[in-house]
Image (cartoon, rainbow, N blue to C red; front, side, top):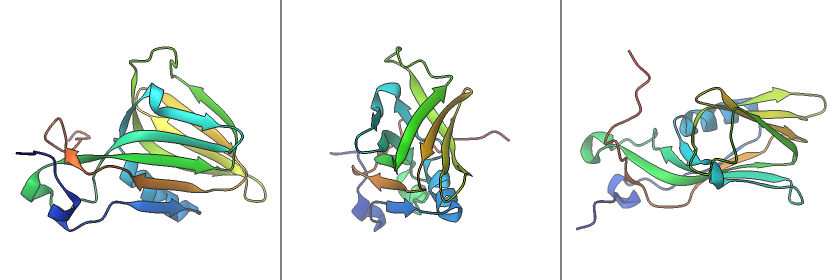
Length: 156
């Protein structure tokens, strides 16, 4: 028996969303909150002006959680029109480092430019200088049962 959940179980389709303004980005940010990824799953392709992360995203949008339990899904978070990438609090040399996304934000500049800011747990951050705001989130695998068996808890 296969314990992995299926999109068909919840009658939900995989996410494939884009953000081109602050309101859209807030939606994407809420969907990637608590996503985790190894430091090795980040890539910047300067010639393509694209920065991407393959992450394990908690399915906050899942309406069937009570029926089948907490799920995660592998997703690609991609930022286009990237001119420069900088980070703090991340040891890229430690290949075993697992990072966790808290928020994705945007600091607007002049004429549509600005910075996409990925805030990570543990005081880490990734700052992307962009010509224009264009962020996409696409699920690339079927959902699977969350290893913890429950939703992330932000304390109460």
